[in-house]
Amino acid sequence: MSAAAKQQDVLSLLKQDHANVKAMFQQYEELGDRAFASKKKLAEEICLELTRHATAEEEIFYPALRAAARENEDLIDEATVEHASAKELIAQIMEADPHDELYDAKLKVLSEYILHHVKEEEGEIFPSAKRAGVDLQALGQQVAARKEEIDFVPPRPLPGEALQRGRPHA
Image 1 (cartoon, rainbow, N blue to C red):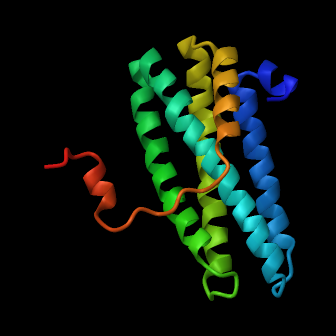
Image 2: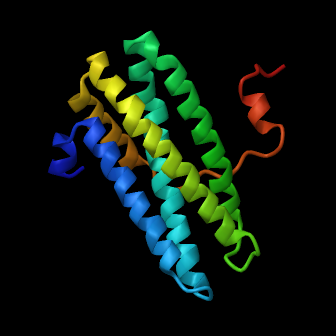
Image 3: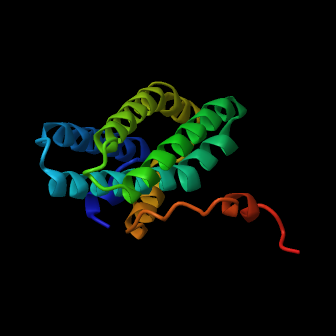
């Protein structure tokens, strides 16, 4: 972990993630129609960065906010649902070929989902985090460390597999 990441509070760290991914989406938009290899490589980078970000938020940041104040529950629930939608598109993109007819459309829709999510997160969740009095520095260190541990996008679960995770095996 870099010295800068160790010193960064969670809100600054997550805002930096938002800016980085927004720049990657812009870079994708600027690629030519026939830049298939470049599109695939950049799409995979975008998906990995979003996976790191969402995982760290869901495992560390959101639970800390939920524990700090009940007022955060609806915001966190909505953000979690938004993450689930993004993860489904990420899985589709990771499985797809850049020659596929809907490849660019999937990246465009993912970009729009993320921009919407970022607007709500920075406009509602981040101010709520400040009010909640959570340790933003400690959360920043934990989020940065967790993101460094993630080096791949997990495959999509097989049909029925996600349902089985929450149930005890007979």
